[in-house]
Image 1 (cartoon, rainbow, N blue to C red):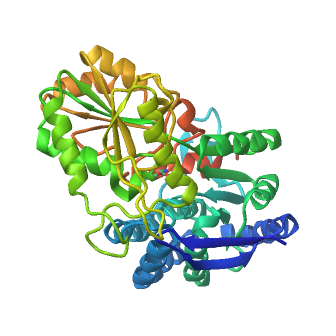
Image 2: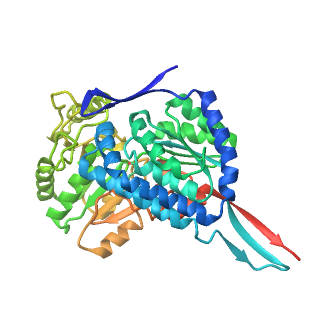
Image 3: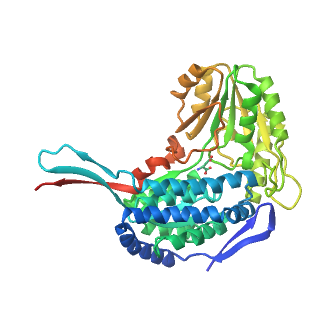
Length: 454
Ligand code: UN1
């Protein structure tokens, strides 16, 4: 039996949890138990389901300090950001507690009698969640799944196992036995979950996401996958430079760039030297170090491999004719710390400007005009978020219509999403229906059309 182990990225000698992996047979057993629990759960009066989710939200609110501390320790997310994420988790639960009582279908004109189309739950939703939003992502999947009447089995990324188990401990008392279960595990457990659940929602890398989609499609079950990004912040010549530089710096480097919504490419229209100077200064001003310290913006990266990837990226940039204008080196010491790294002078088609490195690395790409900015921004296989920085809302609107990303923002960072709005990308960033907001109902339910004749 293999062990799932997570260590603190700021101090890798600190083992946060070590626990036996759920064997495939055990996963299937948990899913079967969830399936029978779901039948009575979905038969509860809707108000009882809303009350349960509300109570779960308040329980999380009451223990938010503990959740935040554990997450800082387990994934190295800086305190201020992690506090915000835990609070977001509480809001998500409250929001979906109310969504239980939303209209759950529509009435249609009928030749005879009454015709209605109503939403029905799938049964057991299998969730495969990443480590980088250890509270928000499990909850933005689990809360709508539960609200719309499904049972949930969640397999978190090994690096966020302890936080997921704490969430389970907090939420479980408010839900019928077997309706919400967390299974520690890695690939084998994930495969067993996909092989037995009734719907699968995944967030993680493109490589794994594709396998998840294929395996689910083979079984003919609904699947959604939210994968990588290579997000551009496009800076127009009339942008408010100090404000834009601050936002791009945090969007690229906050939480060490470990978000699929992070800015990885800064597309500069026109000359742009003043912006670069401001950006380099803003990056240098971001406080680095212990994620438990309130003022820290850049803590460690999640693993030694993640640190090596950043250093390698800087090396590759130099080798291919680019210039490293900030950072580029690992930081000595115990934890997985690496300098925030900004690269200039590489080709938009180069690997560094095309692939997601998932660390504090961004490249500056200079373009002549808006036309070229759109072409460069769209010239990747991803399509999650783009931001346009300009004082001209007309220009921003015109660009927004041409950007191939699921989210477009103006004078705002690429990172940070609103849990009540649809979230997801196009191209290789996402597969399947949108997550979050009321859009989540489209994924967690199927529609039954009923014609009732007297
Ligand atoms: C955010 O930017 O607030 O894994 C959320 C990720 C994304 C979530 C980003 N799915 O980074």
